[in-house]
Length: 135
Image (tube, rainbow, N blue to C red):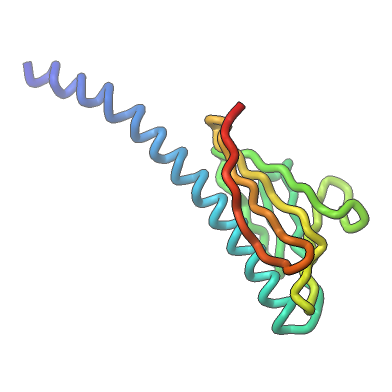
C-alpha cells in the first residue's frame, strides 16, 4: 500500500516540478532582459554617451557592456528595433544621454506559448513589460 501511495505521489509531483522549473526559467529570462535594458538606459544618462544593447534571437542572447546574457533554453525570443541600427541577425536598441532611445523591444515567450513583451519607449527610454496570451 505504501508503494502505491508513493508511486501516486511521484506521478503527481514530477510533472508539476517540471512546469515549476520551466516557469522559473521564463521569469528569469524576463528579469534578465529588463535588467540589461534598464542598466543601459541608466549608463547612457550618467555617462553622457549612447549605449547599444544587441539582441540575438537565434542565440537567445543579449549583449551589453562587454557581457553576453543568455536567456534560459526554455524560452524563445524575438526583437523589434530600428532598422537603421540593426546588424545582420542582430537587433540593436540604442539609449541616448538625453534619456530617449531608438525604441523597440524584446518578446519573450514560454514553452506554453504565453509571453511578455519588454518594451523600450523611444521618447523617454523607459523600459516596461506587457503580457500577452498564447494563441
